[in-house]
Amino acid sequence: GQVGQGYAPVLDCHTAHIACKFQELIEKIDRRSGKKLEDNPKFVKSGDAAIVLMKPQKPMCVEKFSEFAPLGRFAVRDMRQTVAVGVIKDVNKKAATGGKVTKAAQKAQKK
Image (cartoon, rainbow, N blue to C red; front, side, top):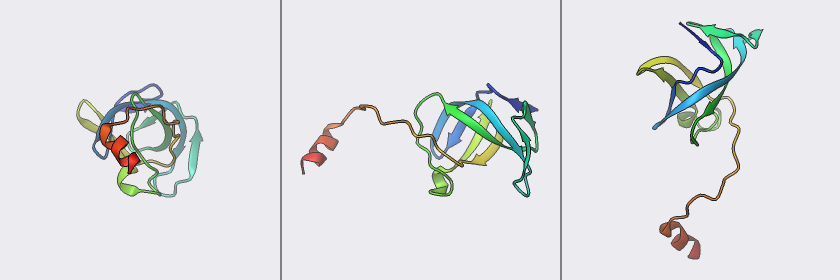
């Protein structure tokens, strides 16, 4: 099969299973050398390698593969079948919003 922009599979990273949308296919690259083959491809086929911009539907805890490998690997699954695997090259971090502070965290701050 082939995967294009707008595809929304489940991304499994460490213990998280969250739906992510393929926002943009940035470039198709050679699997062995890592050299750029094509800018903004319309789709990637089975056996291709690509740099892709993905957006999770819910907040998700990930890291760059170069900084922390266990949180930098992921598998893309659709209907429980693995469609792709990869590593995270970069993370666009969202500013922390006022999340819920637990009682345990409040006690820890007082100490």
